[in-house]
Amino acid sequence: MDNRHLALYPFVSEASEYVGSLGFSPDRLLSSRALESARIRGKERVIQALEGEIEKPSPSSSEEGKILTELLSYPFSRILVSCIDDPFLTRKYALAEAKAAYHLLKTQQPEFLQDLATDFKINAEIYENPETHDIFFDLHFTDYIKLASPLKDLNWKLVNRKMKKGYVKISKEELARLLQEAIRLRIQNSLPVTVPKEICEACIPHTDTISEELEKKKTEFGVGEFQKVESELFPPCITQAIANVRAGVNLAHSMRFAMTSFLINIGMSVDEVVAMFNISPDFDEEKTRYQIEHIAGTSSGTTYKPPSCNTMRTYGNCYAPDEICKGVKHPLGYYSRRTWFKNRMQKDNEKGNEEKKEGETPPQ
Ligand code: SF4
Image (cartoon, rainbow, N blue to C red; front, side, top):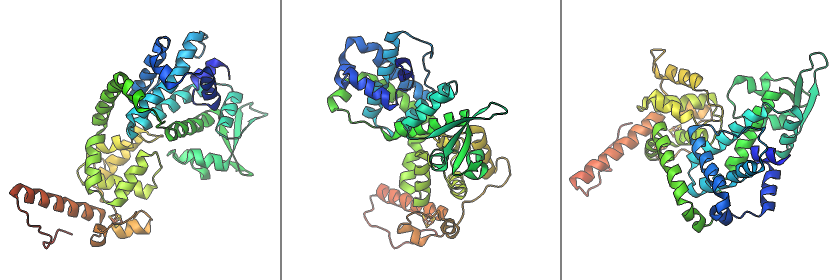
């Protein structure tokens, strides 16, 4: 790749080797006056990621100075994300970088996508349809499954694809989409990087602005408020499902239904549940909202209840049951029981009553 491409795809191995060869230490990246524009752009990358989209410079730009700024802004933005070290920010950042790359990849020649795939140890064979001259790629099914499994559209399911001798046929745009997933995983799994405390302290003027934006976004998505409730009162099965959604793992349909109906039944709004899924790599707001509204009864008139613990066990969705689980038959029962205990303790504390009332029977 030439330098212009390294600046546009700064997560490839060649780009990090090139930056390494320039000898820019984190310290120099932070203090050099000549690198002020790279720092500004690095911070802008993270802010834009929180807003949902990182704008890339024009691919035809050939000014060396601008190319270097763009290239060096990437390690600086990684330093900023690492110093803040917030899982929500890390995921948003990785996803936005990957999406920006996807938009560029769609416009590239097939050979370029093939080379980029090689950087991720993915062998994508190009072939041309002799009649239509359309270009396709053959991808080994193991690579295909690895990258396509978090994507929810049914079209990505292996059973819906043509497979020959272990290879899946995909279009150029589909390869670009799968590479987006590979890029997202590479960036997300490589963060946070280890940054010395003094560097993070020197970054405070930058990280403060980002943290402010981050808190606004979390409030908008109901993240902070929700996490508090979740960690205290939710049953292990639902907590695990939420953790999976946040990690970009595709939930089985039965678990997705259980989690959504649970959240609706304990009083979360459709908007709040939609926002929860907004972190997923293949988020389709219209489709998600339609499904949640159906479960909430907005469109169907029937509010669905989550399945009982027995049914959860049958589908393999009962995860790490704890002591409280032994006394309940339903995930909502678990929540009611814990809410009852919490309220009871609060009342006792208010009255200054030291006596514990464990002998009383909570609701089932
Ligand atoms: S026993 Fe019920 S509430 Fe507990 S983890 Fe299993 S399904 Fe969830």
